[in-house]
Image (cartoon, rainbow, N blue to C red):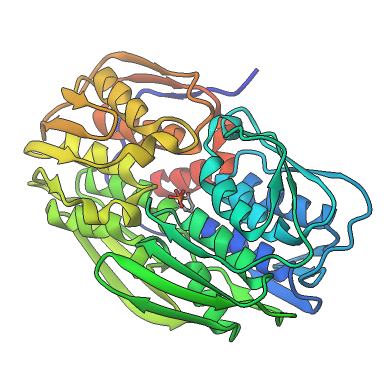
Length: 437
Ligand code: S3P
């Protein structure tokens, strides 16, 4: 039996300071990059969620050594080449990021590797990643788009030219990983997306050049023979923070300080959108850390939130936060419109569809298409309905969005699959309890 969260209360006013767990994108990247160095890498505040643990299991199967010590994780990797003797199976669990990025690393595996995932991951599109990897010389067992798939890499991958037009950091990063293991220079033209991998490569002094214009980044990477170790203190995750930002905005007389969050410009679409809607959010104590920007985020309850016709230039930098942005739209004055968001239906669950369903449950009028949603906001709206959330492919962000909706719109909620939070934010409910104490 999966655990159910029952909520039948509004949240009381609060004034609190919290920390959120380590950033998921950076944690998975640290694990995978560290696996490429034969030297010992050390991370503090590594996110200990199921997605990151799946990454650790995969690199161990590929030959890395991993040690958890009290406050740190240490990895001694395999170097860039693998010494695999037989066909292996890697399980990416629920993680699209892990599955796509590790395929990039497997470009030079000379034994077949089978990649599998859970029910949600097995519904997601992998042709977006097998296509460029084929250009490097990798072979896949069939044209099929979904996991499980078998990859057979090659000893000397060819460098390639690649256009990434979806704004997918997962695709961009997989190609960057494969490029590191190739001969010559790989050129990538990529629609804007999170740039953690570029920053980590630059920090490690790998041969990468990045030029930017308004819409695209142009990246050149040369293949290398070895890489250095990577010691890293993982900052807090802005995607996890977003649930509590929105909880505060939609609560009465409340204030929250979230310490030490990664506020990389390619991740803060949520802040830009919410500020345009009238939210009171400030960054304090901004500092640089190994190329990344970090800050404490101060947020206060915001009256008079207003609707937004959301410019799609924010889509990639807010892609994981739209579910809660839609809750703010539902409590804002006027009609909000979000467009060109078909990528939202490519996530752990079809999130645009689910957002619409949940807004319907709450009683907020909305019109959804395959790529857009119009939300008819009402600042005074509350509900007394019985609402059950189930069969959502255990999408962690749907669970957390539902929790925030319950605490701010009212109603009598039963939210199934509580364990889904273990994917990205195992301490979500503990953090909530601290806020409510
Ligand atoms: C991620 C990229 C995004 C995001 C995912 C994490 C990453 O996916 O939704 O949660 O770490 O690179 P896409 O790159 O497919 O948009």
